[in-house]
Length: 120
Image (spheres, rainbow, N blue to C red):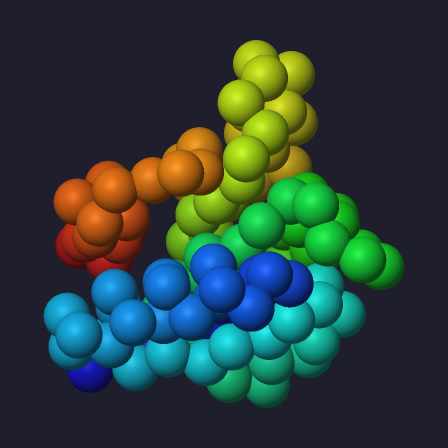
């Protein structure tokens, strides 16, 4: 069973993504801050990470950059899930190593499609 880490500070969105993934057979770990997500990613080495950009403390972009520069986490695929729909945000996400960029509100098919693509 694939393990996915969700790093999301909004409880409703975190629960929504959790429910989508668990109902499709994934094991899910949740973090509410970038710092907590970094610790869990280093400790558990999940198969995939889905995270927001705008969070208190470390932003999702900074977390992504840090993950992609560490030997033990650089190969973990990262999906950015954010309400920021500007080209500059997409560009930064790509530069920082994100593997996919999904704009909220998203569809279940969009989330699952990217998860399936990145876990293949």
